Amino acid sequence: MATILKPKALPQGARFAIVSPASTPRPDKVEQGITALHALGYRTTLFPHALDKGPLYYAGNAAHRLADLHEAFANPDYDAVLCTRGGWGSAELLPHLDLAMIADNPKPFLGYSDHTSLHAYLLKTIGLVTFYAPMCAADFSRPDGYDPASWGHALGGSSNWSLTAEDGLKMLRPGYAQGQLVGGCLSIYNEALGTPYAPALPDGPTILFLEDIGTKPYQWDRYLVHLRYAGHLEKAHGIVFGDMSQNVPEAEYALLEKAILHALAEFKGPIAIGLRSGHVDAPNITLPLGIQAELDLTAAPRLTYLESAVS
Image 1 (tube, helix red, strand yellow):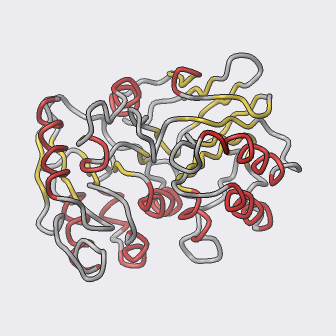
Image 2 (cartoon, rainbow, N blue to C red):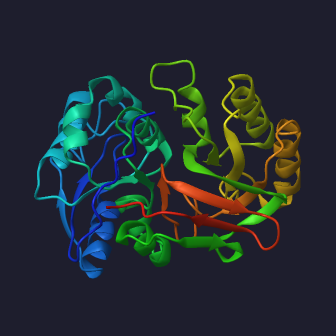
């Protein structure tokens, strides 16, 4: 894995480049999200292909989506790159990314779900710290769709801040771990394994964050067994799972937790669940990926970032 590269903190009145590297967003949701961003004092530019429809479910062809993403990083007028929504499509861009240009113009890259492929590959190749974070159409369009505290800490330069039970964190297995926080959407993360774009195992220990949507207990079990067989848990010292309300009804939570613990019977580190980041219907928590964190499940559950995510 490359040496860690941190983007600059968001300045006051930051301008966001709004792009769609994956699927087509609803225009009304994008407009609502932009209105909310403006109310927070930010400026925005909606990129030329962000609302494109097709081919298929994509927001334009791969060349158009790539052009928007490259311009968002290359143009100094923009302070951060914000995705409209996930869906499917980011993986198509990976072989064509201008990594040298992005490394020369590091900016906060914000999104989740399908954008896990971009998070993992940018960390692996150029060491860029990115943000598993609320998106324009998916979250800022909703009342209380983003979590102000984690957004401010992550993008403002706080060097020691924590997420706790108030953020949904619950203990599944006690213990203590420290390492580089990596991860994202479980299905996207897993499907990259065995390809040149697979998430990298860093030199040191990791804390693995995993979440998803519409994934049943047996599927969580299967994905985790795949991670284990692929050797991807060898560097993991702790695991944090996301909020499960978008996967199963509350009546099935117990079964899902049992499935997770069954798949991780040989994993000895601490395990937490319930963190409200990614696919949630609550204020979405911003997680920096690529920096050092501490998972303490010896008493009240706490995930603490040990360094700033921005320069």
